Image (cartoon, rainbow, N blue to C red; front, side, top):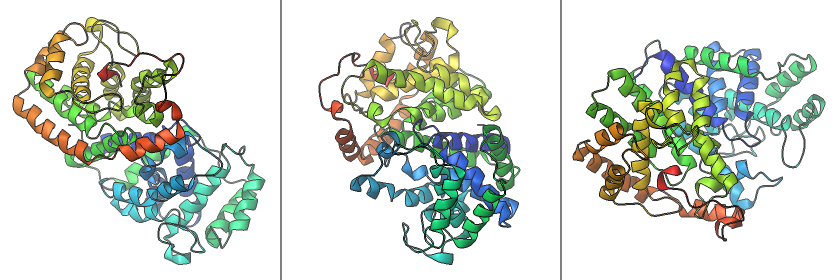
Length: 452
């Protein structure tokens, strides 16, 4: 498996992109908060390491929102409903818990927990006040608000610099720490706050990673970070607990049957964890829909391999994972997506990932059907050799030792027993009545199990 600072830094950049892949009004929010926070930190005398921590803290502060209050992101309203607000207010603790599992970033946990505390004690989750709030969290609170004010929202357009300054001025000593607010206002008056730029942002990701990471990052740390990213992907879709990891394990097992080299096994391992990265851009109402998908809804599903590949293509140390991610829904007979490749035009790593992904999908409960028995799913793989699946990849899959399937199935059953689907789906149905109603005009037929 790949290790080292460069690959790990690439995974951190992918994680920051995951947080920005919700294609609603929060698309650029985290990166904008990160850039402003680190700029304010430098002005307030923080060290390079502290500014780097602040940068990643800003990006990851909303990790806890994934799978918790997707309706607040995807169906924004001027005022949050009480039940939605209650869920939103849980996200700092969830972000704190998740960052504690990211090697080399555990020290950022207090920033994430306290980035919604107010100077006057009126924030959450702990009601801290004044200098009880860590300085980094005070900076995040202001940067978060300023970035939001400058962006489009459902009930208003973006505010201009003067309007933003007026809001900050009114909030001094209330929401915002006076010293942080005065620093921002001075920079704003001097025109010293640079406009957000994606190229600068990407360079800052790399510099921040170099500041925080040791020169040698262990394979174990890399595996832990892959797990964190996969857990976020799985959290978006309440029906796929543990899916990404199982696909990775099965893909490596198939590679072993084919006696593929160590590099290819490494690509399949990491690619298995990241193959559904693009699902972060698919609305929850689509992922959790129990009925037939409309053409528009299925377009979101068809786009997720390309969306995930585009994230990886922009990260030099992860570009070698792009092929499997982009083509894992192609079919041997040419009926797959996103490009309709057929036969040997489909790269072998994608053929392997396709059969492992399909098997795990078939043996999982989904919103639109119950799980299949593992033996029935393997029989389906056998029946679809040379049609859905590449013959070589399918045959190797069927030769994977039984003990691997048994171990994964036991873990799978445990994960499914622990998942919390009904409340989320019920919340979703309150937002989108069509989930419970008949298929709307233009709906597609239910897709095969592996398509979603």
